[in-house]
Length: 96
Image 1 (cartoon, rainbow, N blue to C red):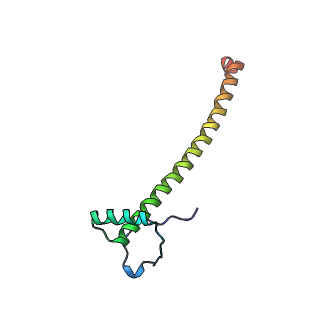
Image 2: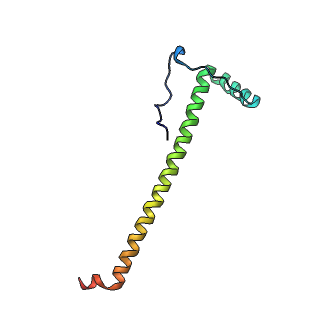
Image 3: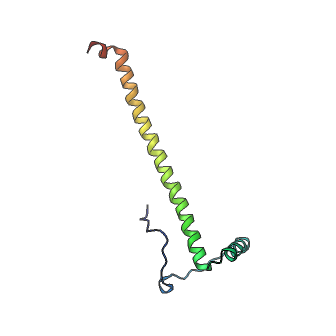
């Protein structure tokens, strides 16, 4: 996975990278309506929206990885519990 940079930060306009977008007209109209209400610059709004979208997907990726790790750990401990049950049923622990 690519290294993730720090969260959104304000940069001077000269450091910004120009980008051409093809937006769905409905998405653009909805964005402009929201942007007009909150009175935010279009570039800042789009940058923040993309940043929020990235946060959402990073969260999903981390959650998926954690769920997989939890499953692997659970499977490992189930095997250990089975071995303890076998030892317990064999009566070895009673002799000790």
